[in-house]
Image (tube, rainbow, N blue to C red):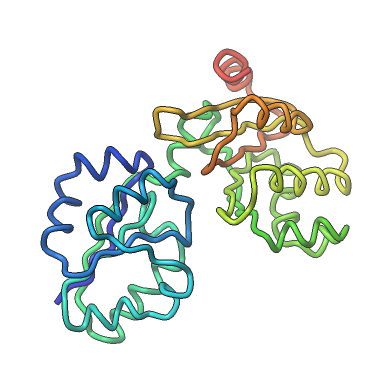
Amino acid sequence: MLFYLAGIGLNHIEQIKKNLIIQELLSKCKYCYVDVYTNYIDETTLTIFESLNVHKADRSFVESLEILNKANKEDVCLFVSGDPLYATTHSSLLIECKKRNIDFNVIHNVSVSQVAISLSGLNSYKFGRTVTLTKVNFQKSDKSEPLKDSNYSYIINNYKNNFHTLILIDPELSTTEPFEIFKNYKRIYKQLGNQLLVMSRLGNDDQKIVYTDYKDYEILIKNNLIKKPFCMILPAKNLHFSEVEFLETFYK
């Protein structure tokens, strides 16, 4: 019996239709699931998965380890958006497999962090710690308590040290809430830059990338330029002229 942890990259529909490894897993595994907990997957992709008898795995299902109970008896696959080991949730599943003597196989794929950094045109060596904004961050910033928020410290330290910051967005957040969080961070640390690189639906035909003032997010949403999943990059304090040229040429 084998537990498969399979990344489906960013362009989910094309991966499902064309990826021979995914097709093989669909045919050989008795139980197939798609993780809807660690990343956002659109309804069109979910509909395709459901038509292939792939079930949604939400947070409670993934963390209950029920999927591994099944893997003790049958071949089981968990499809994951992006690369499967980018989230610690999936690393924990593999650790549990080792404890239970369950054989496993990991099928890697491209992650959003790789694509975002590559497409940004910013120097990849100048990126500091990546942060993920969640509902917890929103609740703290909304209560004027960003100083108690660890991501606040990471973003500020990156900016002070002249590093770029990749900001991932928890799928539970709305399209407006990440900008509200950023606004409250900036309220405390006024030296934080205004410009954000907003990257929506990377890897898909309708991807949008905009370099804009964070205060203009309502205009972006009104013009349909932000759709889930999306992430943001806060550029470093001082940019190389080649970085500025790339941003202004392609994303302004």
